[in-house]
Length: 360
Ligand code: PHB
Image (cartoon, rainbow, N blue to C red; front, top):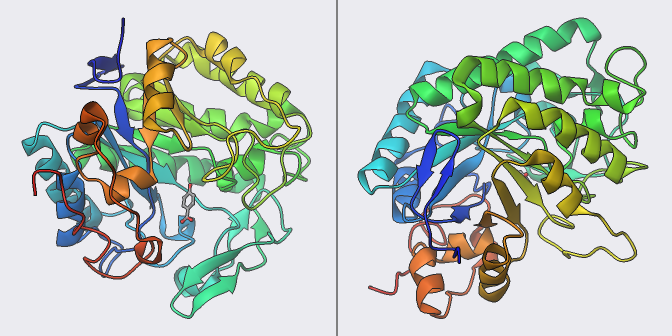
């Protein structure tokens, strides 16, 4: 019987166990949108995860939507990330980077020359973001022109190349949580006509072009993807999530990706949104490759899910923030440290690199 603690091969990446650290925004980047020394220590402490999925990282200056997030668009950022990947590898861990474009979830004060955010639409989201002045409503976006899409795809390609240059074992394409790619996918947001709007095929086009570019650049065996079919967060659900994501996964299957990472239910919230069933198992049957699940997994549920073969691996978010040695604690059935929720976003070492291990 397979357990959570058994090794697994994800494409080209060999993991020591089936416990992943989910990507987590912590807003502690230093000047120049670079990970600093504290971030090196934070990931080093968590290197016993089978796989660390490093926090969502903007692929270009226009892709960012929150203060102090670490980017992957220039050489200085590549050099800074090298310190992170070396530290994780020195501990025997594996680490991929999540490639992020926020789309309309941004604010002019965060963008170069006060640019407006770009999206599939010019409709503003009912959401706020974190800026120098604290939480503020997001800015009115402008709809990308079709002739701007090739440049956007190139930004993803460069980010993937940079991630490998920075020593990452691969990348995870962020197609979840109602950011740019999902703003194109969903008919609740995408009001375009032309090749990127209208039918499911057209709304999925951007995602598939990104996957084509990234896998062409670094290989499918080093590329994973994250989806969140039932998350509302900053946008309503699609009118037919099962059909939309069914098509997406059917199109993804032939690429032979390293893994597919699905957030079940509402990100950070309920796993079973009221009266809104979704058949995740159907997606898995279509995908066939390594299947990673996430969202509010307890130890028991994670053990059961992998033992039953319902997923190949489980990603933990908040428990990994407060428990650097989460793998050991899960193995031993040890109690978990309490999360300090007021230290999640921004600030210093407190609530970041000072959570105790069992050994301490
Ligand atoms: C956030 O910063 O709140 C955030 C970032 C990335 C996500 C979800 C939430 O995928």
